[in-house]
Image (cartoon, rainbow, N blue to C red; front, top):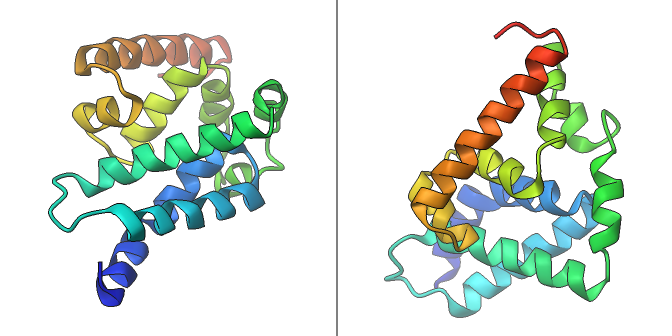
Length: 163
């Protein structure tokens, strides 16, 4: 990969990869470090003929993050970090009350379901791309997305939000 292609590649995907990594690890510094590792791996091993660079990049980001969290024995801390609300970067990005309610309801979803919705709605990935990133079948992703939306709707209606 030449330097100009790398600049374009980085400019196109850096912010969404950072947000995805941050949503997984809930640490600004760790997400920044992991993002650099992901792009270094892309520089070293991504071929120009790869068919779905975006899905590959998300999969590398996910695996890099999970490996780092395992290495740091932080799985138990993930649940505690999920409880962080408006003080996080995502909380600062979410500016109006309806979006805050949606964010809080999403944080109550199981990790896998929340991750599927984040990839689908915020990263605008297809079911097929999400399946590739999470190493699931497309049908499994559809079922988990359906259940997540249903649980999210119930949570939102329970909090008095009209859908």
